[in-house]
Length: 358
Image 1 (tube, one colour):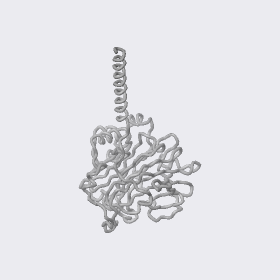
Image 2 (cartoon, rainbow, N blue to C red):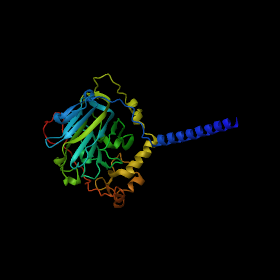
Image 3 (cartoon, rainbow, N blue to C red):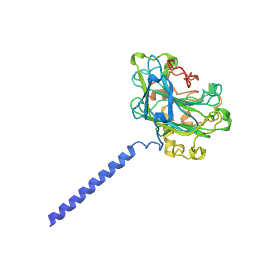
Image 4 (cartoon, rainbow, N blue to C red):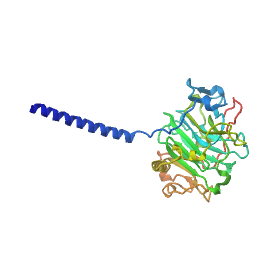
């Protein structure tokens, strides 16, 4: 009887010990696991996009939920949303080309330059290629009403290799703010200020994805060009999201039965930045941003109206808006040779020729 009781007691202790380790492991995994993706509805290519140029370099997946854009010696390639949108949430999971990618630009952006040639609006994610062994860089920018001379560039590196796996890149555009996301981390937030005037994008825009040859400027000021011995260069896009209301770009009236309630857009999950997300944004900007127009007093002696000066962030930068030398040494031990002046890009437009190298 005593032997049976001892065995039963030992079994209970063993079960309790195993349960403790299981719960501890579960808690550890929960803390280490990445945040869930945004609660958004993905679409097929056919539901939201059309070829922009070089159809022969656009490869759609059998289920039509993914698309590969190629750059080779004949041409780059690009796609464009089938409609214009007046505010919304626009997103895709993207995997960039690997190996030697100098001179290459992959872009996920919004624009209306094909309709408003002299006073277009634009919101950019631009991925800038590099020589082998050096990381991809990202540039975000914003134009409103043709404000090209007042470029608002920021440039960053990433905490992962964007050529190894898919990551989500998103643009939230509302009447009052713009947020750029990498996965669920808001890397840049622009709050609309009255002093911005027309510099805040407000006209309907299309959504674009392109890959093209930018050898003249993209890597080390054009010193390293695209090497077509490594062609084709493929950028993959999947989990496409166009969460906005299609409108006529001129009349700005929707012909669709959709919810254009801006208040509802402002309260959506992706539009409400949590305290944890703000902490993540501070971490990202202080660790991975290497240029911002807000601290570039050579270009802008008076910061532009939307700039928010963060002392802990500002301390990392020189008056040129670029990282101080001491910070560069910590920053993957690389020195940026990027020029800080604004570069105006020639984008492929809707209906442009299919064989031109971009």
